[in-house]
Amino acid sequence: MDMFKEWGFLLGEIWILIALALLLGLFAGWLIWGRGAEAQHTGANDEADRLRADLAACRGKLSDCETAGARAASRIAELEQAGDSEKAAPVFVSAEPVPAPEPAPQRPQALDGPRDGAADDLKLIKGIGPQMEKLCNSLGFFHFDQIAAWTDSEIAWVDENLEGFKGRVTRDEWVSQARVLADGGPPRPMAEKPF
Image (cartoon, rainbow, N blue to C red):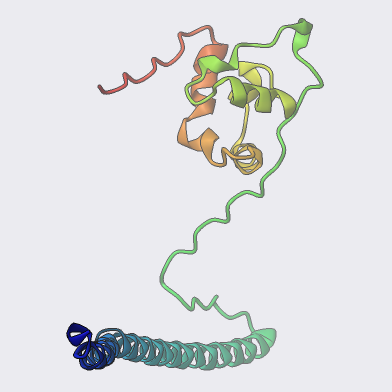
């Protein structure tokens, strides 16, 4: 029994050491993670302040543009009033050329089914696979000469309406390929795949 007399003292010391280790761990955790969160929060505030400054600068530019636009509108009204008595030369506000408006997309002529019951193999056009051919057929396009006759506005319509494949007609130059195939020319060779 003499051996167990000192255990009470040892157990008390062990509990004190465990409590000290716990407090030290909590303090270390606060130093590592608590301050890191404060730094992240401060970083978020810095970014928010920067974005607020950018927004204020954009609003200032917008205000300047609105002011210039109001002055231009006022000057145009003055010139139009003066032009009623005599014809004034046209006034150009900007020296930059105005780009021509793009044609409004227009649906190409579609067919209810292939002529003479036989459709052309549209897969000969680079960029048209089995799924794309089915999609073209569902839109009423079965023959090379149909695709070869598409105008810019019709190409724009098809590019917009190819679900999941938008822009494919322009990217893969379907119209030029279809013209060659409609005239009986060979299909465009497929690019070799790198190893």
